[in-house]
Amino acid sequence: MTEPIRSIDLAAAWTAQRDELEAAVRRVLASGWYILGPEVRRFEEAFARFCGGGEAVGVGNGTDAITLALMALGVGEGDAVITVSHTAVASAVGILRAGAVPVFVDIDPERYTMGPTALADLLAGWARNPATAGLRPAAVMPVHLYGQPADMTAIGALAGQYGLVVIEDCAQAHGATLDGHVVGSFGEAATFSFYPTKNLGAFGDGGAVLVQDAARAEAIRGLRQYGWKARYVSDVVGMNSRLDELQAALLAVRLEAVPAETGRRREIAGIYHRALAGIDRDRLRCPQVADGVGHAWHQYVVASADRDALKNHLAGEGIETLIHYPVPIHLQPAHRTGTGSGAAGLAESERAARQVLSLPMHPWLTDGEVERVAAAVLGYYG
Ligand SMILES: *Cc1c(COP(=O)(O)O)cnc(C)c1O
Image (cartoon, rainbow, N blue to C red):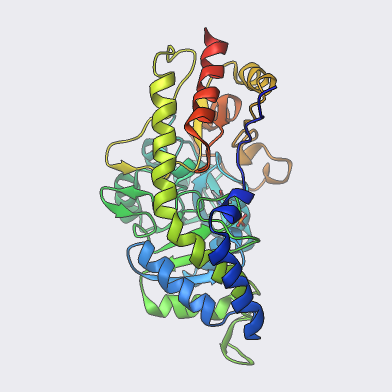
């Protein structure tokens, strides 16, 4: 019996950098400083450099990062934040917790990210659409899903035309680039998650907001801790969403490995691409990389009308696959009301939910394992 291939191997991150990670743990435990201290500062600086500039603020998780970014941008009650339904449910939760309403727009079926044409239609029909008429279109939040940046040129142009602030959900795209710019620099704010499965993962929860100006960073530093301006003086209500010293120290070690790990993800995507290119696109669609994109390959996602049968076939070969995501947010029990879908509907988002399948993708897969996965996919279509 051959070894099973898992979709992700979290302990491998520990094994790969054990000495440095253990040293970081010992240093923090011995320091007597456990939350929002020098390790968080050091990681924030290193992470902002990795993102090509700006200021990073460490927070509790990627969902809170969205809420805090919107709060700092003055987006809340009565405001609509336009986003996609084909994403982690956290994208919508972060918006709702800021008091705003997510309004979903359909995706581009090739890129799986916000469709600029759908966005243009939604904005043009805003006042006539019963789902949006009472709301102020305040912000647009594209999600760089699977590691591929959304079309920020087209989205940014529409945001400019309609006076929307842009916030990027970068939870799946650490270090991805578009036209040579690292994601996180296209909008007024960008949010990141360091959930263990992400391309930069902690050994627990963590997140960050990246902003380009110092005043806004200071505002988020206050909001993440009881709205404190100075110790024990709350300017605003704020919340409690802090990054701890242990996670920050571990993340600083993990961050150093991310460029090489992203390189390995690209190699793995290349092996999949070459092996699967021969399958008719009517039967299996491999991911398309848009022009100008430096993909971070958080996931390698194929799409097929017989997705469930393919998934079962691969499971029978000992290969674990995942579905990101089986139910779009607008069809989730908790999110069916209060969220407008836009005149164009969400047909592509619903189709993606029926068809997408994430093949194993993490930097510690061997070439042999990737080839075995590809052979099993080919076997299904053979
Ligand atoms: C993981 C993720 C989040 C939420 O991050 P948490 O750290 O789990 O709160 C938000 N958006 C997207 C697209 C994600 O993948």
